[in-house]
Amino acid sequence: MTYHPKSDFMRVMMERGFLADCTDYQGLDDALVAGVVPGYIGFDATAKSLHVGSLIQIMMLRWLQKTGHKPITLMGGGTTKVGDPSFRADERPLLTPEQIDSNIDGIKQVFAKYISYDDGPTGALMLNNAEWLDDLNYLEFLRDIGRHFSVNRMLSFESVKSRLDREQSLSFLEFNYMILQAYDFLELNRRYGCLVQFGGSDQWGNIVNGIDLTRRVIDQQIFGLTSPLLTTSDGKKMGKSQDGAVWLNADMRSPYEFWQFWRNTTDADVGRFLKLYTELPLDECERLGALAGSEINDAKIVLANEVTTLCHGAEAAAAAEATAREVFEKGGVGDDLPTLELTADELGDGISIVQVLVKSGLAKSGKDAKRLIAENGAKIDDEPLTNAGLMLDAAALSSPVKLSAGKKRHALVKLS
Image 1 (cartoon, helix red, strand yellow):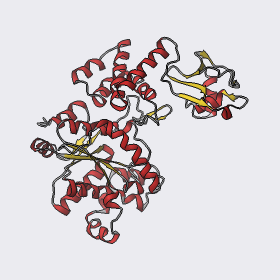
Image 2 (image 1 turned 90 degrees about the vertical axis):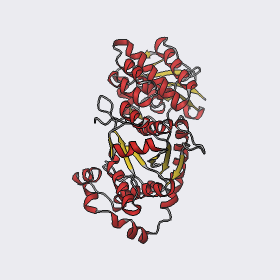
Image 3 (image 1 turned 30 degrees about the vertical axis):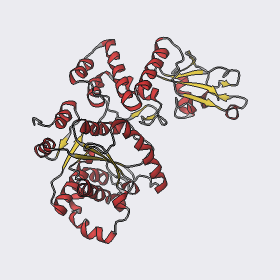
Image 4 (image 1 turned 90 degrees about the horizontal axis):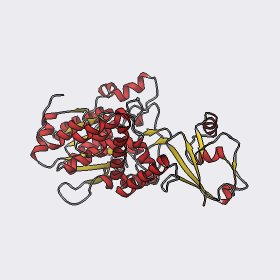
């Protein structure tokens, strides 16, 4: 793409690698130059936290605000009741209204770290689409909104087609999702003057639907801008690690484990991730990403510190780095390691090392723990753990025990 942007926001999106596609580069760029542009991203409340896979979108909203515009974070209190079928092999489990509200409370904590919600012209808005979706009259909605959608066209969208091509069921409930998302964009434009929707490139069809609907119903021009769907250089989906999702809330993923995830970035991804997930100047991102040999590890520490500072604060980042140095360089225990506290009831007369590996999150199952031990991948207090039948009793846990899975994953076990 050779478009040369005039606005700061579009320049940042293009230079730092955020931009996959845009419905109208020139039109959006002109709007961004002309005044404050409200832009939104919708987040369905399917869990109590967002994970690293959503961080690229959150950073887009942060840059939108930093370049003088107005971010809107739209909670899917209404759409979560339906579930987004995009590129899924099966239907999402349906959540109760109470679960959805609880999840929204958890997700809101993340945004306050990245964007500022205030009454100023660029102050972010936190909205919930249940506000306009919950009380819709079905017949009126079908007549006024449904008539603008072509089923033929909806069937041609990649997110739907891929499901049907695999002969996997797509319920009528899910098929409605893209109509509801399009309606969100229309309502946000009507109520808040929202001009642009951001999303991953898998949302392209849904975004275009909203733009078409708004043009047909109220004759307004609005825009869509998508980011690439990120995978790591070894082809893994961004946001997942060996032991599950990398959540952004500290109560679901400790700041130390979050820091460690970034510290373990593959060499080839360091420069790209610095541009996307930190605010370091571009030339510094490129310099650090080009380091070779053992020096690239210094760049990974910069990446881990910068990303953790944004998400959990500078103190948490410094504590995580100090713990990592203690654990890896000095073979110590470190204060900030994930800790499993066992009660006297849980311990009883003794607990098997296999159970402890699972409870601490270092193994997914008993089978996984036994395999780890058999393949010499586990350590206890930095010594090889070779006995899968080992039992830990109160005497063994009179001081904290350090367990390791491979070179990079550790946990402390102690009595509460």
